[in-house]
Image (cartoon, rainbow, N blue to C red):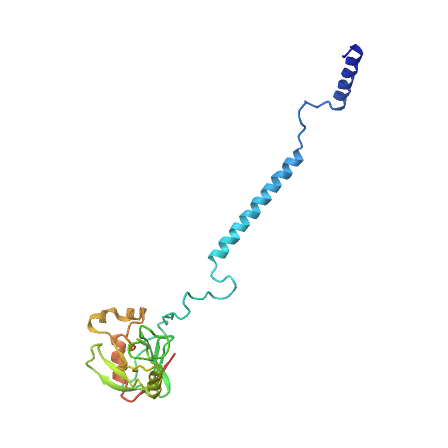
Length: 238
């Protein structure tokens, strides 16, 4: 039970407390420096999260994350490369009466180069068999042969405008097909475009579409046919 003396002591302690904390309002004091520090931490966390998101987006859209060119989905799928006008047909008029004495087909780049007197004088861009990778192995495989051959015949009335026959199969081709117990096939030609496709022109090279033959536009075939004799050697390389 409090008496007057006890109440006096309580009042005295309260007065002493008020003198020590004149601004005390009865509520918890605030610390502005702590609020600033908390804000800085939040800003830092937000910045790190933003950098992480940007890094993820960069990795997703980068084609060469390790500095090397990306591999195609199917490494065996050939990539067509269009040559510049200075590399492709035509390259100016040829001398009258000039004949091609050697042909070289590079399947990978779809380039048929015609030589005269040991130097290249024409480059034609071609389309190949619909299954162009590797040498022809059997009848119906839609592959263009690989090896050393000769122009075996000339047909001015071909259904594909005009054509030059290729002397496939050679001895090596026959041995390869015999090992597979399958016929080697034949009738490989260098030819133009049939009447129904003549207007397509150079666009025919967008894809490989023949059954193993080598296709040119009709103006290109006209020149090649005129300047290539039977017996002219042709090398077909991968």
